[in-house]
Length: 167
Image (cartoon, one colour):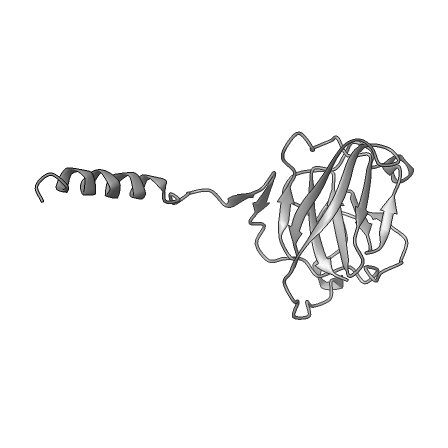
């Protein structure tokens, strides 16, 4: 029995070092993206219904009182397709996404997306800065849209973060 005691202790130490460690940051890495805690999630835009055209917005003077309340959302993962070049060209990745989470892009994607697709049933807001800022330029893409060239919206190679909703 004395022979097995050192091995048991060694196994316990190895197991405890493999467990996730507590973090003191406000972000969590999920795959290649980083979920960022931005506080209360802003209300979903009213134009996120499937089939609506994408739109660019960003009036920094809009008061918060114009935003509508959030309806309860069913949380489920889905994938946003992104490409480095226009018309689904170049490097491609399916970004695994959950609703009501702000994601900062990782894996060399910040300022590198030229075309993208948002699946039906969801809508996403893409931001030209990290942490999904509510003031500044935003590109709203309702579900079921494939944007073959983000240059059309002035967002080519400018996306740094995004936030999605059920559409």
